Amino acid sequence: MRVMGDWPGRLVLRQGWAKAEARPWNADIEDAALRLVRGSADFLAACSDCLLDLGISGVTSPPLPDVSAGMWLTAGFESYLTLDLYSRELIGSQPEPSHEVTTRGGDDWETIAAIDRAAFPPLWRLDQDGLREAMEATPHASFLLNREAGRPTGFAIVGVGSIAGYLQRVAVHPDFARQGIGRSLVRAANKWAKRRGARSMMLNTQPENESAARLYVSEGYEKMLDQLTVFRVTHR
Image (cartoon, rainbow, N blue to C red; front, side, top):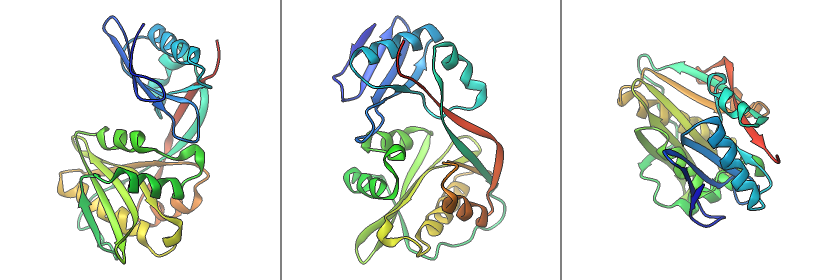
């Protein structure tokens, strides 16, 4: 196993043609988030062994659909967290945001991460590396930002694949909660994706995040039967 990088920074793990990347889950959770680029279940197991040998408490997968779970289960990972999936069609004109939302490239990662940290409990926070991964998850992506009185209050990360859009992240600082900013960000993301050819929009959220679920449903999203699962291994 060849490991490039120094923990707790981002690591690249290689074994022949196989490749994976790992980063800290976030600043609060000591797990390593492992992303398989290419390789087998044996390679995944070797990667997790390597990371656990560094003293890391646990190794987690990305959120995965059932069809992708087999390799991780074979590698010794177990179900850890679930995420609910929501989708909606992007047909016809889309409602306008009630707050100003600007499109940016996501250059001020420190500010973005601070909003995310305030908006989510420790387990679900994304640090700067995680937020960048969300931006890189689709071929085309954008960062949407709301400001009130010059202060950044909330953001969304939205991307488009071939014909589907993906709302990767929505966060509003608690100081500005219940003012409709999250709704404006969702609407702006829908419009952005539709302009770029997306026919539908998908997102995921924690099952216990009932306020977010109510918002998405009120904006035309429907909960899907399928869920995403995060898998984890802690020892061998």
